[in-house]
Image (cartoon, rainbow, N blue to C red; front, top):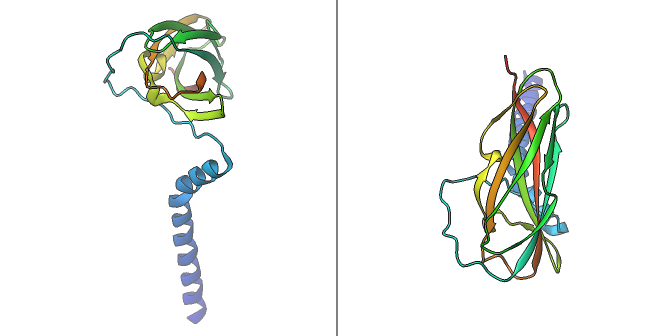
Length: 181
């Protein structure tokens, strides 16, 4: 009986320890990234509230558009423009194209991150300084078989962008959502 109790106590302690480690993983990961200087990207979401656009400023930043597809996704995602200079508070309308190379349609969702480069190196996530007016990343999209679709993107960079930031990378990764019947 003592042996069974000992095993039960050990298994309980291991279970509690694993749960605690899983619970603490995200804060530990963030602390590690900050310690070694790795920027932590956050997924930006549209909360439905758009900031008022101020007067267009003279300061320019370079926006680079990057596209990736998750493994096994039959859709080629590409930005129409790879790089553009934009002034703060200046609205920009651009797009990505998505070519489904499969014989079946696909439902997909694009997830994006926005990482900035400054005169001092990587700055990290800047989604709070970018006001997305329209983005294909906000909702699930249907990609018809053997067709190309245009995915519009409209935004402006706010004038409270910290000094020294000269480049913002918009990186989109397309994931398959579910099977289409």
